[in-house]
Length: 476
Ligand code: FAD
Ligand code: 2HG
Ligand code: ZN
Image 1: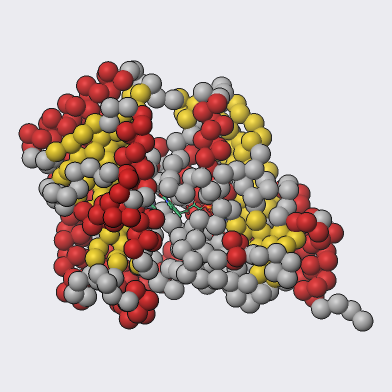
Image 2: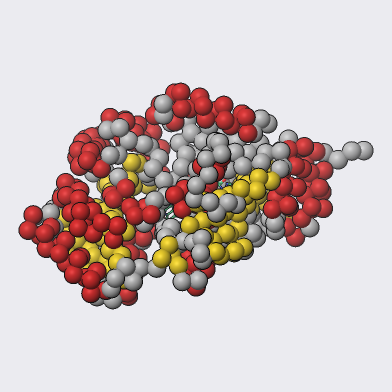
């Protein structure tokens, strides 16, 4: 008697990878693979497979393609749009890249590093640092997210104002295609106009077009000094004005510009009082600025103080501190990076990751705040993010003391519609850096140019005709 197809596939996968690297729920607790980071959704995989090298990934894809079983790639599972967990069918294979974490090469003359997709971002940063260079991608989840996941989502983070998104940091990719072939695109070239840009097509495709197995990335010189300042600003307009001054007077030295609303900071103060959030009580917004200098700390400090002095005189800063040492600077960044956790501690909430032309952000915030406050009396807005990139995390928390689950049930759809309509009005995007995943896939037709969406669907069909790579994510 022949085996059921799923059992036959499991046996093939075990032959390809060894029993220890094909995990099933009858033997292993798979919750860390099957549940999203926010613990809002739990799927069920046929199996979690953990290949050790590119050839094994290719073999897994071929076996799954033959069995017509779909595949969900996963790195650190820190994504915030539910794109890296299986659906609840129990029929999908979850492909974890975590065992593929090697640094393959560093070329100090070409200023490049080549790493495998499962390399954790923080390890990559350390490897670059040990070689005397900077790999500038930085985000709150860097201790567990992987470079493969960063590339697949085109992650942003806190250095984009100077160095760009993950896409801007990548020169070459190695990718396994939907029929199990390997595209050897690990070029360290800064110029290559030999046709369509497949690298940039794969970046940001969230596992729907190919499995990224390795990447060649740009390295940068280490700055001689990095200074961090924390400024109280009287309004969003003032924060935008401060950004203009910082661009004008720090030039390429401006490497970070984050804005944080008073309520967002009050949550950090409430849940992590040991972090001692400065200046938040008497101001609607605070700004975190970073100045990287290729000369010296004295030079950096003088330039920073000059900008802040101008800002005081123009009235766009009411108070400010410049970190005296690395420990203080780290603490200020730690406060910024703790908002997500503090918000989770406060209870279930609605997240938005939006971008708007920077010039329109003050009006966007004023109008959307007013609409939401009218729609839901007592609603609490957790507004923070990468103002230097025009990217806000315009998150929405239930009124104090309310039933948070009921809040989501009753208000989530209407809140999303209100925020997205406002984003549309101001010419923005409903996903700036986190991606589409399954959370935003049904909203895309309302907010994306229809011709662009059609081309995306055509590309998906061309590169993954069986629809086996992360189905139901990004495009339907
Ligand atoms: P996963 O979550 O495992 O996967 C994300 C997506 O990529 C999924 O669609 C998955 O299928 C696909 N994928 C993963 N690996 C591969 C691969 N090798 N090949 C093909 N597809 C693959 N994001 C930002 O942009 N900026 C931030 O500032 C930021 N801060 C965060 C802070 C916190 C506390 C948390 C929890 C998350 C934050 N994120 C941020 C979101 C998240 O960390 C990023 O999206 C990150 O890039 C995901 O990496 P990962 O390895 O965890 O990917
Ligand atoms: C950040 O910038 C992340 O800290 C997470 O992108 C945003 O928690 C969020 O909404
Ligand atoms: Zn962010």
